[in-house]
Image (cartoon, rainbow, N blue to C red; front, side, top):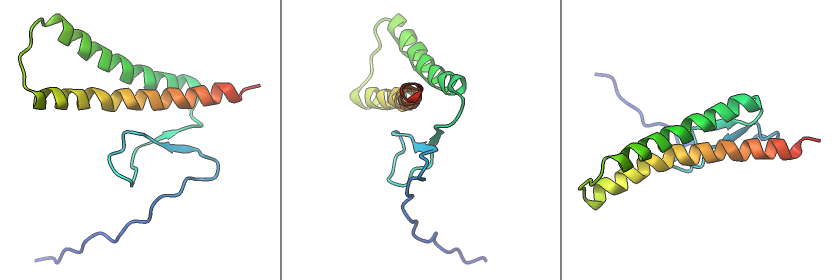
Length: 105
């Protein structure tokens, strides 16, 4: 049988000087794995933010139309976390768009 070796300790990522890639706020540890390409075209960034925000809005609208939903606090907490992740991602992308627009002459 093959001996397994643990992963070596990771080095914390230092931001690239040109700030091309920005870590998403919703990364769940201090070792980010999900990033935004801050140099992507503005329309592509807008589509990414729009997709995430509209997905959460659709889920919440569907929940509102269901009437009375009985559930405990653990389920509500999990549901809130499910909504927060794409909302935060969308807001992060909108922040990048805002910075890019403000830096334009």
